[in-house]
Image 1: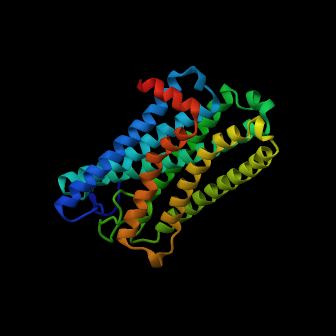
Image 2: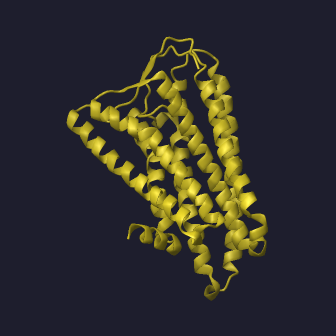
Image 3: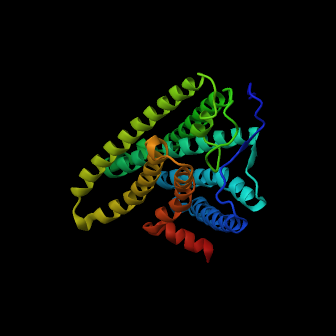
Length: 304
């Protein structure tokens, strides 16, 4: 992609001005990054190696862990390198790659969260049809659709965003390249095209969110009809981690992109960016393994 402006690099928002705080941020984010890689890596290995976890639910969880590893690797390493080497620069091509992979991985992750809601709905509300509705071929098709949707969405957004002329400088008010901050640098009316694409994506996200809500309404109605001694606790245990992850992803994303402009500031945008792009990928593996005995046993077997 080539831009009609002369921008060859962007300047990302720094976490701190003093050298001591920069090194402190580097150490903090390095710890978070390694914890995220370890947690998601353990889930990947446990699901792949333990035949008892070769079920649709854990297959989708494996994909989610892979996406979390990729999404946090898109933003944090560059931020840590900038803090370590006391720089803010990222190349034009590097910024485009960051935007593409960030939108791709988070879009695919949201699709998988929607698919996992459908999986829980079939498992609890239609258990007799679980094998026929969620067979190997059906799971593969849903996974391919989730990955493909994320890829096409990212390709569309990246091509639209980096075809704009930029004449408002090259300083991005975030610690990684994201579309809303780059749109602020545009100097033409062409940015309305990207806004239209963003609105289309938000409408798809809203439809998926409604699907998740409706699925869980049906799930809770079915679970409340189950006698306590016949597995109500187990049904809630398989749904609760998924609900926590959805709530964390949706709440941070809504606050990041739908907050009123009147309360926007560089420091608040930086904090919200960290909450949205760093916290969910790092916390998700611990949320999923906290109340899942089968997954905890498989992970413990790996570590010992």
